[in-house]
Length: 150
Image 1 (cartoon, rainbow, N blue to C red):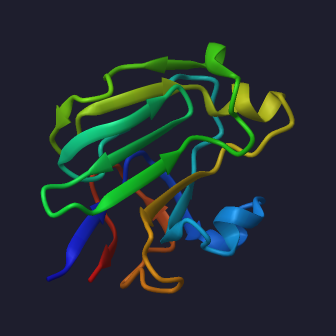
Image 2: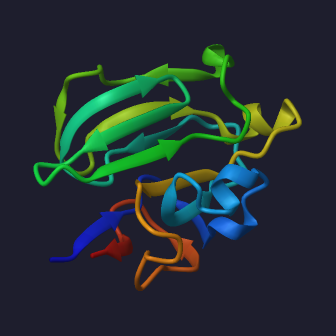
């Protein structure tokens, strides 16, 4: 059984190996794809890449677990823990979400002005490194298939 993980925002899809964080780039949390958001000061919305329950929600990150027990982590920006003022949370822990439901909004350039990466890793938790299949690279739009996982 294969699960499709959809893009939670517009941007440029890239391998996790390009993320400037050793935990994500080495796929220690799991396999997946990162999205570099567009160069903008506008607030953009990060949406649910799968349907399920939000088991963790911080201003900078969310974990959604689907009905099969598969967890997907989205981390908005690198080293953005504690920077809650640049995010606006649009959901709550315990909420059930459908694909495309809003999770958080942020300005990519607000993160970049702090000298941080605005990359958004999208990772299937506890999946084996390299297990993301048919991973997209290059321009991606919200709701498009980003990768699939067995």
